Each structure stands twice: as structure tokens, then as C-alpha cells.
Image (tube, rainbow over all chains, first blue to last red):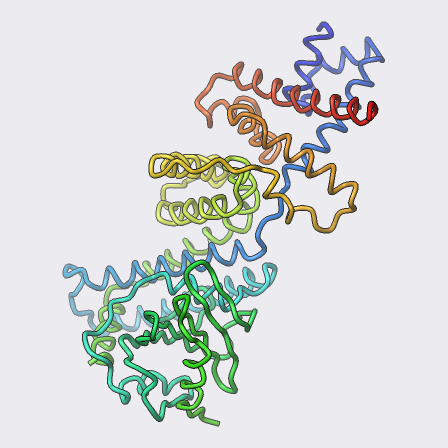
Length: 249
Length: 193
């Protein structure tokens, strides 16, 4: 192996430990100097290649997947071929399987969330806010909204604006039921999320991205995140909500 | 009305699932999460060096993992997961170019956030090296990053990039040689100043 070949081989693959390279170093101790030089260069390249990774990236990837499988469930429920009635025996099997799935889900969530830290409530709500929902043609009556709110220990005493969507869904990401309300605002739709206290989210504060502004707040027995289009007076909306809400003690 | 609708929906949902669906779904989620935790960092770094932009890199990684989730059943062998994800990401990146030719981004503008926690001298050196890697043409940068970030061999890189092994080894040699020459020139310049 001549000098040029030796350098070429090392530059192409510095970790190559072929017999030829070892022999070349043994035959010519001056080559050792070149190997050391390459080691320094490679350490610099390795360090430079390791750019910082966004801390919440893993959480976001798991949340997106949870949303995706939620959509799969919603889609499949509309498939006529699957609408056959299940008998009682099936229900028991399903219930047992659901319990197993729930426990596995808990284990996965606990193990996967802890090392990564909590996803910010704002990031969580923004991800959902980009997913459009089918809204009602008319504003949903207050009593129906309150029926949905009841399990969160909240009631609304007055209208907070036209509510065009009110639905709770189970989120696999943090294993809680989240109530999403879509309210007609001044600058467009306002998304409102009511979450139980054990939602494992962090960052309870104001947040924004290129399209939305939002605020995540904690209350005594539930948490709330509101997300509005830029230009929406969210502070006014939040005070209206807070004045209307009666939180069960 | 709404309540009634959702009552119907939840009944339909229960009817749809058999126990095998539940357990296979749970194990699929477990596989997916393991994949995310094991590989998302390297995939993000690889995407970053492919596109030189943090936001685009993050979007690419999100799209890649979403496609991976949908196609997870087709991944038979976990050992093939790395190259499988890289192939999906490269395809997503090619689609991005079909949709829109993005403006070129100056790499120097995007490294300010990368250097926290190191000393000033290390900062400057690392920034400088990042800029040099960013300046390499993609045909050199990509095989180099596949080797540095993922530890792939020449054969594996050749397979991923659909090139022959000699071409890959030549590009790897040139990529490092360019960086080495730049380091030497930089040292010379520093001395002459």
C-alpha cells in the first residue's frame, strides 16, 4: 500500500482497521502521525454533525401517531361493512382486551414520557388545532355543551359565544379524555381544550406559532387551553369564559 | 343531537374491534414508540444535513415517522429500521422538491442555537466546522453524514444511495479531503494574519 493509497483509504473510512492499513503503519512509523491527524479531524466532524435535536421532538412524533390512529378509528367506524352487531360474548372479549390494551398503554406512556420530559400544553393544543373538525350547522345549545363539560367538573352559566363543535375524545398520547370545543370568535374559530388534571403536559403559559396564539391555564379541577387565530382578542375571550364557568369543588 | 351522535359513534367503535385488533394495535404502538426513541435524533440530524434548515428537517422527520407508522407492518426486521426510515425520508425530501423548490438557506444563519453549553472557543470551532460541512455539495455531504451519524459502511451507503461502492468511497474521500484542506488553509490564514 503506497502513501497515496494509504491516505485515500483513511480519508474514505477513518475507522477502517484493515490488515493492509495496520501493516502500512507498522512498516512506516511516520504514518502514525497521519493517523493521529485524521483522528483529530474526525472528532471535529463528529462533534459538528451532532446538531441539537428539539427536546420535544419524540413527544411530538408520538402525539402525531396517536392522532393518526384516532383518525383511523373514526374512519373505520363509518365503514358499512363493519356495522354488524356484536353479541354479548364479543362484548366481554372486547372489554377484556380493552383492559389489557389500557394497561399496556399506561405502561408505554409512563415509560416513554418520563425520559423525554413533558410536552408543552401549547404544542399539544396547536397540533390538534391544525386538525379540522366537522362543525355543526347551528350553534350547539348550552345544555348539550354542559352535558359534555360535566365529567370535567365544569358547568357554563352563560353562553360564551356560538359553540360549533363539542366533542370529547380519548387521546392515546397522554391517555386522557380531552373535550374540544370550537367557538366562533372575532377573527375566526377559537379552539378550546378542557383536560383533566392528570394530563401530563407542561408549559402552562402563553404560546404562539405563525398562525395561532394561545394560552394554557390551570384551574382547580381541570385545565384549559385556548387557541385563536392571530388577531383574536384571547384575553377578552378568556375572561368571558372564566366569568361563565362554574367549577365544581 | 351532538350527544346522541357520539353515543352512536362510540357504540360503532366498540363493535368494530375484536380483541386481536386491540392487542396488535398496542404492540404496534409499542414498536413505533421504540423506533421513535431509538432513532429520532439521528434521523433529525441526518435530515438537517440534507436540507440545512431546522424547521424543514423537523417537518421531514414528522412526515417520515407518520408514513412509518402507517407502513409499520411492512417492517419485518428491526435491524433494517434505520435504512428503512432513511429511505422514507429521502423520498419525502424528493417530494418536497417536486412540490416547491425551496430557497437555499445560508447555513451560517442557522447554527446560533447549536452551540449552547460549550466554551467560546469550542463554539467558534464547531460553528466553523458546521459551516464547512454545509458548504460541501450534497453528493459529498450526504454519504459523509450517513457514515458519521449512522456508522454505515461503504456497501450500506452504496445501497441506500443506489450508487456503486467505489463511487461512494471516492466521494467519502473527497468530502473529508475538502474538509481537511479547509482546516489547513484556515490555520495558514490565521498564522499570516
